[in-house]
Length: 312
Image (tube, rainbow, N blue to C red; front, side, top):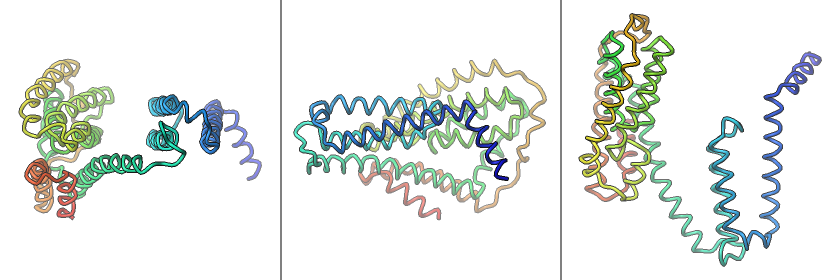
């Protein structure tokens, strides 16, 4: 047994991928240790070149995020480390800092944390609401509408369903749901890739024209940088034109055949009354979030967490 483990370890050590990982890990460890030592020593260089240090931290962080598959880093972890490095440099070394964060910097940190918390609570509650709907098989309301055996017809149906659901449930969540559906619905790998590309286009087009359809739009809305009614009325037409034009372009790559007959999606079946109630109340509640924010002036995440609590 011991000899077998040794041989496996030797095989891993001689593997090029393992060697690359080890080099990256050692390099990262050296860079991290050097950075910690530099900060711990309260280096005068940092005090006089704080702006340069923050730029370097930002650039290195984004390189780690962009090339996460190459370096095999977790981009969320990289972003958190980058954030910590930037705040430490700004608080302790930038400008007139004396090595200890001032009351003004702490107040700025609290304000930034408050803004980030708004969007985090909003998205967490929205994702939880979608999970509750899915747990009650509420999405059968959607899948029961998919009855066509024509691939081109299905392409249009999936496109418009994705477009309108993204406007309500947010485009990232809907993309995940629809791609999971396509795995059962479209057996052919090449067709599924084309359908997946269409879902991404439709989800992005649909998420633009409501304040709750896209993370970026939601952030702008929460920070009072845009209003609900102008966003809907002024962006709906460009969004639908983008969708239709993209579908017209992509559908020409679809070749009709009988492959949809091999679909593993269960045939349409009646949804239990409880599932219907959960689905429609969830949709209605999400649509009411902008109304709540406009009428009360309170952060939208309060409405979102209240909806989630009511569904539980």
